[in-house]
Length: 264
Image 1 (tube, one colour):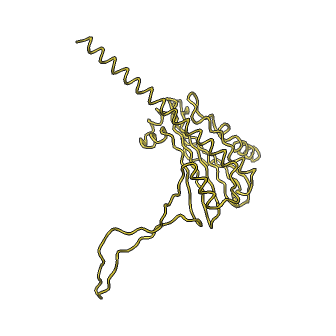
Image 2 (image 1 turned 90 degrees about the horizontal axis):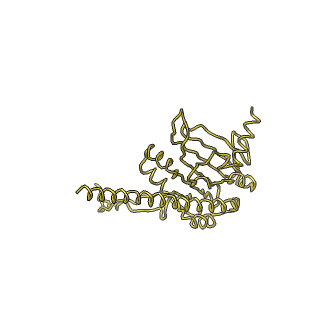
Image 3 (image 1 turned 180 degrees about the vertical axis):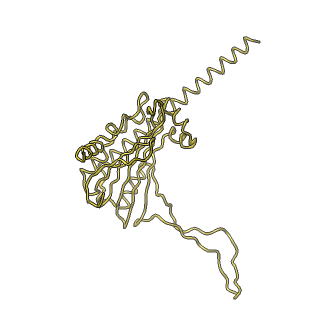
């Protein structure tokens, strides 16, 4: 009986170990796949004709990466089913038709999301400890998103963002923190009341979030190149996280450091 119990326990332990290894490998391979997709997206964004792009070019670009408009066609839907209503004067009123915002060739917002399974799991659990667990296992949750705003038939604004959860030493404790970079490319970019082709700033969001924002003029190829100088390979690395913005966004960090040096 004792021998049978030991065999059952050993079999159960091996099954749990095998399941853990397979799950880890699945999450890791999925993270690498999405990271390569993100690298391809960044490379194509660097050569995308922002200043002349219209609805069709933007839609075709978004479709290649599995993106979609935030508001779907069509813009008209019937309200809940109901019978015609007769008012006190004998007039007949049909069920109302509700109008919703629409996405058309003149005005639309498209979005591309790249969300590895580790990020999806961490989001669904909505748990600090679960994100910390994944990060400690070398499966740091991360995601990237890009939005395209069409106004008057032309592309007016593009926003690319990437965020990674990593472990940092805070007050002697290893806690999960977020490292996020955002590149905003828009027409006639104004910052602090002045026209700038390229500017970078770091807003203080919370003790657990480090963020860097780069803003580039849509008509400046050099500013776009610098804002999209993103080295995303570190987001899926197993043995270490992204060291910081100097690794994740070197051009943006260099500009931010230079401005801070001049100010001081």
